[in-house]
Length: 74
Image: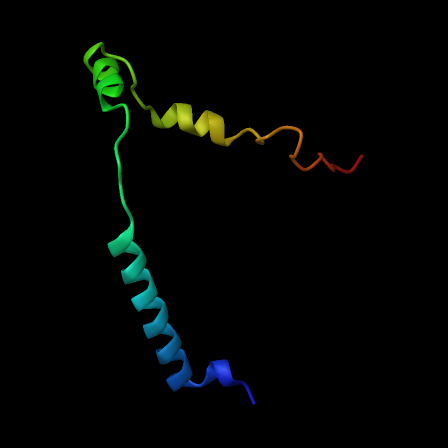
């Protein structure tokens, strides 16, 4: 017997998960701190984001001391 394959149980679990996520999203508090500093940087022309810069960061293993070793075959 596989209880998680039962459509009634799947629907019930999906409903519980949806209600839990609705509760979490409704109770999350979003606060903005140091907005004056960020706005000053933006006014000065700094703080830009570029996809190519993010791609360069994403191509490197981070953090280096935790990254998996290179196991290439000789």
